[in-house]
Image 1: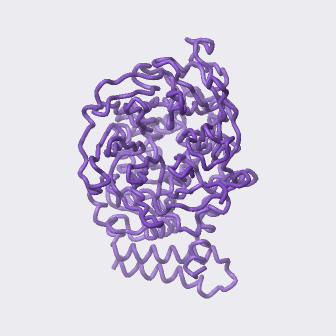
Image 2: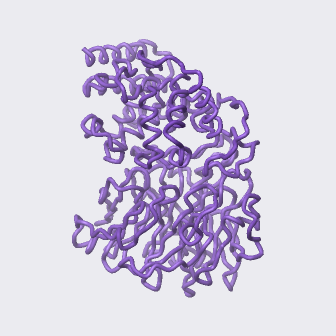
Image 3: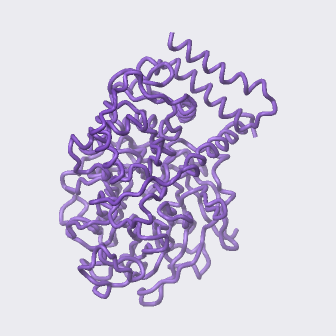
Length: 205
Length: 410
């Protein structure tokens, strides 16, 4: 009962805002956006793939819990506009209004981040290689040193390794670009083995 | 103010506060010495290696009218700003059709908008979508040209046939496919040719100087490619000086070479095919330490320095008569605003008054108020300017998906 649980979560989140009259209006507004986002998540059954609480247990499907609000908003607009080609996201993003994509961003950002339940054990060699590459490529500048992202730059620490590896390949091969082309330039010319090492390292952070 | 309005305003406040925190809370990562940095980070000093500066997020959702900062805009005495059109996320470059429809290109959101004025009110619609950075829009002989990344579309008889299917012109133009700096500014020159920029596919690098960092012109059918200027890193705005037919172009200099160097520039392309310096020389005769093969003395100096990292984009000469005499013939330049600078700069419109022979220009502020220097934050990003037949000027604001109208007197 993914939808029902998400709806209950949404109601639970909105309740304190309604009861605490001393809470600041911005916080109330944020809670309201989160609650509206939760209702959309229930209605569109996002949890079936991304996990009930936004932590994905399905290979190649990204976790969204604790993701940057602005990143989620931008990506949903790209899906809706047919600019980011992921067939599975075509239907779920269809007809979303601008306010709804903002609400979904607020909702996923509000969920606690957690690594996937099936995260692999750390391979020290791959981890160290990935760390060295990540340092050299300055991933921490935009994604921040803890790789939790900022604004339109996504939270990548603890993301699914399979998803990260596929995404890095898509950037390198020019199949995907973000809201700008920085990632295409950052991973230009890297080998599959190098991308896999980065994916392993980032997924283990 | 409706309760819904208050809620949205409050929500915006909460969200902007929430998202200011992660950036402020960053601590430097352990330093390392890169053997070969990627292209976009080349030339970056160790001191800047862990700078948190990054491009600003594009806002791809509509900004409600009550949150558009038109009241923040400051102009010289006698000028006024009004909101002319809104609800167009990502609105950037503008071109005006013969029937008065204003076409607006975008980048990330992939749309081209059309703003139609009828009986004193305006309606906006999405004319084209699902394009890759359709920044360039230009109108010629009733046809709208849309230039996206490595894609050229022509909409014939667009005024009579607003839902025209485009003619695919991509093969004829055969533009480079590189995405980085691959978006175009486009305009028809007094010679009837279609001009556009071909940006450099990196921050700074060694590249084919006959293929990138160019301003090129084509016949309208895509044939007859000619290089009008070499060594122009990325120009996203140009115009011809009235009465002279000499091309002037704004130019974005490289990043990661310091807060104050090199300066962005305005160039005069008086001799077709001339080299304007990049990657060797930029700004105020600033020799790039990583590219010393040619010296600044080999290149024509820019006619004006537009400030470091200010990102001068749309640029047009004022050809109307509504503005006072002193403003006529000046270049108006929309400065999109900096990201690669600790203290933000730009987010405004400046004017450049050229001397008689057009070789030098004096830069003065015109439209300000969108940058809060104290808070180091911005409320809008002027992106293009366009003179209207009545002599007023439109200014697009990509950040708010809006177009302002600047008028004088009355």
